[in-house]
Each structure stands twice: as C-alpha cells, then as structure tokens.
Length: 255
Ligand code: IPE
Ligand code: IPE
Ligand code: MG
Image (cartoon, rainbow, N blue to C red; front, side, top):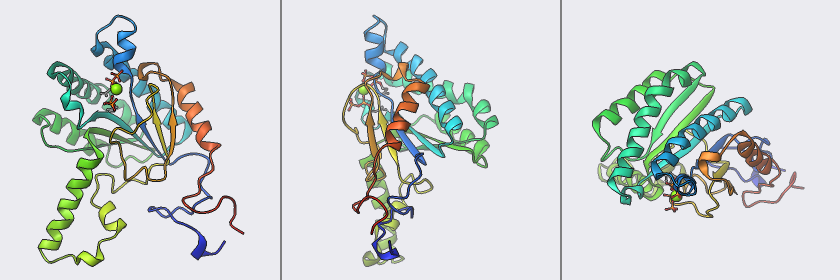
C-alpha cells in the first residue's frame, strides 16, 4: 500500500487501518416520548429518565476509552414541539450541567456544546460557558452536547463565515477546500465521526452531523433511549468492530 493509494479521512487516519474502537461516537438519543407513552406517563418523564441513560453512556465511553462522545439532545427542528416540552428540555440541560458538571470534571471529561447559540436563554449560555471553561483542560473523554443543533444550520453558519473572509479579501474562493470548510464547523476541534448510534428503531439521521458522518458506520438499535444501558452501548461497539471500513478504497492491506 503506497501513500498514494491510501485514501485518507479528513482527520488523516489511513483507511482500512482503523482501530477496532471508534474514536468518535455520536448518539441520536431517540424514543423518550414513546418510552413514556408506553407506560402511560407524560413525555417529560421519558426525557427525565433519558438523563440517566446519558450518565450510563458517559460511563461506558470512559470505561472503553472512547475519545469523543457526541450526544444529540436538542435539534434545531425540535423547536416545533409544544413550548412546555421545549422548556422542559431546556430545564433538563440546566439540571444536567448543575448536577453532573463536578462529577464529569472529576472524571477527566472535557465538556463542549455545539449548535447555534441563537435563541438560547442567557442563563443557559452562562452554564455552557462555565462547563466548557471548568473542563477545558481535561483530556480523558470529550463529551460534546449537540444542543440547538442542526447540521444544515451549522453548515450555513460556516459558509457565512467563509464568505465573510472572501468578502474581506483575506480568502481566495479558489482556495476553499474541505479542510477550510471543516475548520469553520462547530466540530472543528473534533475528529470525524466513526460510529453513529440511533436508538428507538428509526432509520434516519434527522439532521445530525451530516458532514462529519460522511464515512461513519451507522448502528440502529430498537431500544428506546431511557432503556439504553451498558449492554446496548457495548453491542453497538461490537457491531462497529465487526464492520469493514473502506472509505471508497478496497478492503484489506491494499495489494
Ligand atoms: C428524544 O426522544 C429526545 C429529543 C428528541 C429531545 P423523543 O422526544 O424524540 O421521543 P419520541 O421519538 O417521541 O419517542
Ligand atoms: C432527533 O430526534 C433529535 C434528537 C435526538 C435530539 P427527533 O425525534 O427529533 O427526530 P425525528 O423527528 O423523529 O426525525
Ligand atoms: Mg423522536
């Protein structure tokens, strides 16, 4: 396999030589409402129980040595839900940061939040800033919370910033390449996704990290998010380890 024939990912990993453990796992945490409905409970109870599943997911990521875990917790399209539900979800983010931040910090977790900051209340902005500041130097696990996040919105915001540099005369349009655009995405500091897990039996990405998941392995689990546990996460990691990633190339050592 010569350097010329080795397809490379944006972050520079040689294709076909990836470790069996994904570096970056994204989870679309879906099914809270159905979990609650099936028990005759309010949807909010499903969301509340979903936070416990978040803690379990972080535990597994720490135990298994996953470097980066991104959790989709509120999409830019979730604003279309009833205002009480939106407010409840905002309240859960507040609660999660207040209750769990010290513990996350103690465990060496670096917390990052991606998504648009527009429309977020100022107290949430302060909590996010505090979580990111306190944990900035941690390196055991990067926990990325995708909140008020939509991939198309993220790409539009990135393109706008690139266009501003072109307009200012500091960037030649001919110099725009994948790396330039990727550097303006919210995820610029993180590796591409290796594995995307979606719970609840839905088979779609729902505007989650579309650019970053270009070559991610997709694992869809029937489990509803509040029931997601270590066994579910480990099963997805095992499934990932059994996959053959080719990045457009040819499997194996490339003779
Ligand atoms: C996921 O559960 C949580 C968010 C999208 C915020 P849902 O609330 O989407 O639950 P279902 O899909 O209606 O069951
Ligand atoms: C995706 O779930 C968003 C999050 C998990 C935060 P949704 O429940 O909003 O997705 P759709 O509407 O079923 O596609
Ligand atoms: Mg859903």
